Image 1 (cartoon, one colour):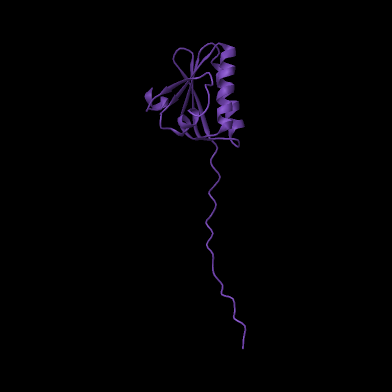
Image 2: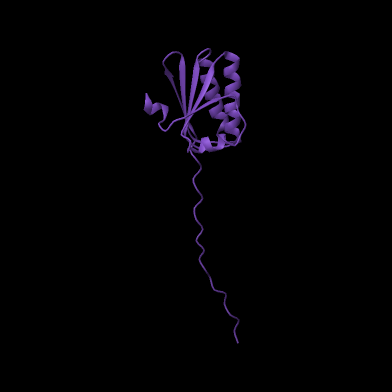
Length: 134
């Protein structure tokens, strides 16, 4: 009598998701000393440092004016992203600069911001990204 041979099965393992692309930060100048910052992509622990440098530099450019943060294209706003918003609000206050966050109420970033206490930011709900509205 011979021992049974084990059957071989081919297991299909899905490919891992590609690494998320770095978030994009676009900075533009609006009317009356307004700096408009558009952020897109994931804003988390991995991508936060690069975004923070750009956002805080833009806040410095707007000293005494106004900063508009358009977060409608942010797919994920993690704790690191919330920390960046807090740092931007603190830096803006130190420069006498107003910070306004523009969000569609259904955007992922809007849902995340509803879970945290006030960051000292003015949040304006819109359904058109700032870049498209101008």
